[in-house]
Length: 337
Figure 1 (tube, one colour):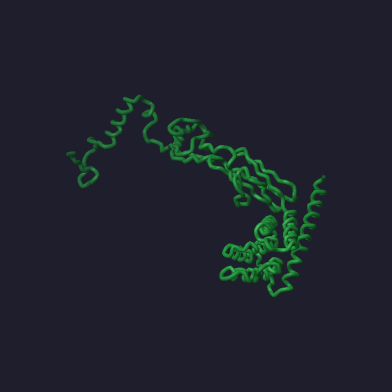
Figure 2 (cartoon, one colour):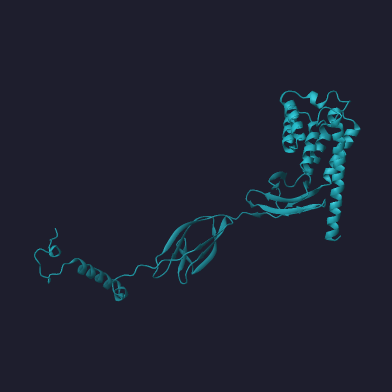
């Protein structure tokens, strides 16, 4: 099937599913219109049930429920969902899962809508008529038609799977996950392994597969040093290159030194981190020029020492040939003690 045909088919499926959901929601609205409760669902009106949902709630649960109905009618579906969930947790009444499913559908979160309605069928439909259960099944099926199955596998068992920052479970998953159409981020991670991240775009109900290949964390990083030609690069007091060097070092603290004849050396400590690359561009400054003649630095060590003493002598000894001039501070003679 061509890409154009697939897009057209997906659009038709989406429209049919939306029409089905709209029809189911319309039934709910008609039921609410026949009662004073603006958000009362067929669940709350079942004559075979001992008491309606609103009558069976009390205290904080009833206040949350009534506020949830008010928020729903004012278009705040997210706020209504929070209130219905709070009422369900405090009361333990699973019939509130129906209202949660309706809110999720209004928020276009079809995966959650279907899951909430499936949970209602499993735990909250006791005592309900077959017509109510049939409506719940139709709702769940229509919502699921707007989702896709996501299958995640990995070369490493026991890794945790996250979908859009929400944890799905640990591999291997007990059952494939369902996701809404759109763009999602799948992350698979496990201690001592580099996390795997993949972005998937789902535009149909076809099965989407993610194969995560995890690599062990190697406690080392890469260092790149660039300097001028013929300048020595040393790592941990060992010369590793001239002019430029790139290599892998164990994670942790290391010493870096760059030196060259006629230049001031450069030294610092660097910290290498796992699976990271650091770069250093180093330009050495020129060393200060000596005022002594060049030939002084070319002689042997013994002569150089003598020359240094001689230089010091000429610098610090006063000139005996220069006559003293009375009143001149510069010619005052002082004896050393």
